Image (cartoon, rainbow, N blue to C red; front, side):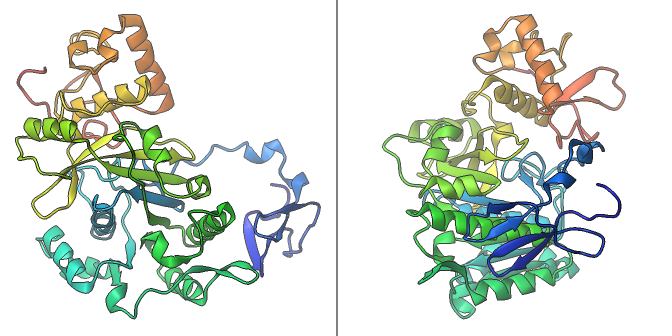
Length: 430
């Protein structure tokens, strides 16, 4: 940055997006590029020399550690009757009421931000929302001051669903309902999360077939996230596949519609039912009865930036909410897509169970390789320890010193040992 110039201020004028520059806010037009929406963007390219980026970069600001960033648009995709709406409501509850360090992960990590959360549901009526909040909140946090931070709007009982985006005679447009919502969101000082469920009810346009429509909607979501500073998540559907989904790549391919929807957001998290054999194995290991649809798998299938890309296992609790039980599993743990992620997954589970690994020594990865999943358990010492070094360098895992102990124990960011409150559990480590 040179002189007193200011960057990053956006002035939306009709369908044009103008970057405002200069001491007095004068526009400097040295280049015009298509913004993809029929308008143009004015950029001062000479102001963006490499020395602009000489300071230390700001750390990633997470809503859910290692998973969902603050201020970004995202998609939560799932097949029908998987439980995504309930899970998104639970995420809103945790953000609004606060989430303790011992709470189970949700959407791949631990909630690390608190603030107001808005949940708009086009499908669930007041009675359904009421039952779910009652089941999720046995301590009555919603009756305290924090209750004002959770805003749940069951649209079937609140005037009905209104389109936020629609296809007009001159192309895609944002409706007055979306603009009025934006005004209300802007008035919430501590807004941290907005969930819109489902996308199809609010987009009166062929977002599944037309890439331009999908790109328009995701650009609109991105602007809302940027202007409010909140994470903005929309629920979307996955199509049923000929064979069970096993990997994150397969889950991404199963998200309904054009690739513009996934490409246009910063984050996509998928949830899909485990196939019957795997589900029964998980239930057996957990000591729970099996029923169809009781076990669900999930993970980040797209992220613009660092993210913990592991397949998590969810089990429905007594009132139907998905709970992350990944740390409770060994034999029935889901297969991971790559060795680095598989190592982080194994280290996270071991630390959560109170029996963390070290890189070397008696508790080291190689010495305790019988506790690792394939193909890690068959790796040689040098390759396994080198993989751990790579994971440490990439920030996928961290080294922590437990109270009263000198060895460095391995954990993932946000884990109990990483946060300094880990407790060792006695017993067999197999």
